[in-house]
Amino acid sequence: MSDLISEDQRLLRELEGLLTVMEPGSETLPTVLAALRAALRAERTAAYGVDVGPERYHTSFVHGVGFQEPPPVLTELFDSFLPPSGGRFGYFDPARPPLLQRNRPLRFTALGLAEGLQALPAPVDGDGVEAPWERLGLTQDEWTQARALISSAQARSLYRRLGLEHMAQLRVLVCEGDTMLGWVGAFRPEPFTEREQHLLHALTPAIQRRMALDRRLREAGLLGSALGAALEVLGRPAWVVTFSGRVMHTNKAGQARLAQDAQALTAQVRDCIRSPPGTGPLFSSGPLRTAGLPDHYLVLDPGPPLDPGSRLPVLTQRWGLTAREAQVLEHVVQGETNKAIALHLGCAERTVEVHVTHLLNKAQVESRSALISRFFQS
Image 1 (cartoon, rainbow, N blue to C red):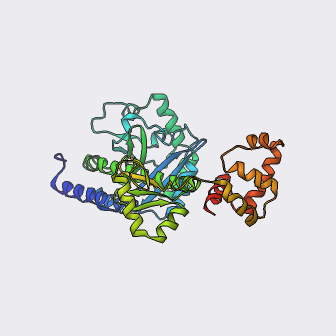
Image 2: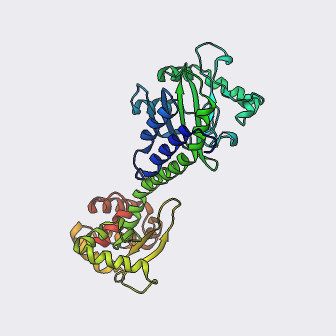
Image 3: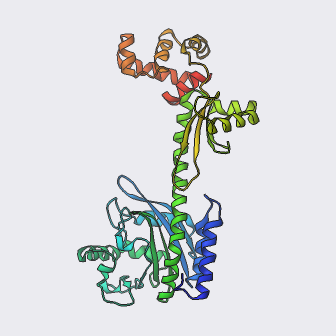
């Protein structure tokens, strides 16, 4: 930061403040991109993330400031140009960017409309000593392949659609280790200077911290559905809570307990996670630790031992089960596979599959785990 002029130091503090004060999970990047556009004296700024799929790369987010295209169209355009898994997107592989391009802002010339490799974007460096592919951490063959890709009709069409064919570029691949968290960059007709490059370099650590947090929150959201299904299978009131006792996830049985007496239950949960295991009515798993997030705890009510036998006659009548379906249900709720049930009952595995399908329909659930959960909660 000491290398920056006083005006850029002020801009850096403002940008770092935006990244720090906004609530986790909020749309930070559009706000930061708008401020970055002004700080870099750019015409447009953009940011996007890439997820690695089994066959193709996909955008996890796309934000743009100064573009005529709305965000959904930007996402569609980027997705259409992303290569198959293991391929290159411009001068880097999104799954494993070259070391020299990680967290290092780079300036590029404009694409231009002329034909031939000389019209393609090339990295700009003050000393001009190294070959362009060496500055990007590529071999000469990789450089040639990347430029062939950028010179393709599809790539030029993308640049034209976005209005970037005559614009210079300043961008950074924000990475955590060898994982790319996102691409952040700016565009304008005039070449970017070392001053803007230094400013973006000074801001990159703050962008990296924020993108890492946002990535973990997105992953936590994706895991939320799986966590909810797992809590339901327990068949007991269960909660994922913070150290203060605030409930972050729960199952239906846990919701019912909260509805009965939320204040008393919250006190029991707090006592549980702050006391030695086995000293209260509730059981805690101990802290669940995720980098960048505070500790959480899985708390459940063990209750009396589960007794499938006492529930089976009631649910057989309620769900209108046949005698054979009731037998299959008794084994299903004990966690047995269809093959094991077939051996117990002396029938074909396919017959058990048919009975399980009937059980799902009569219990009005869509999965085996949901059937077990409903059996113990009904």
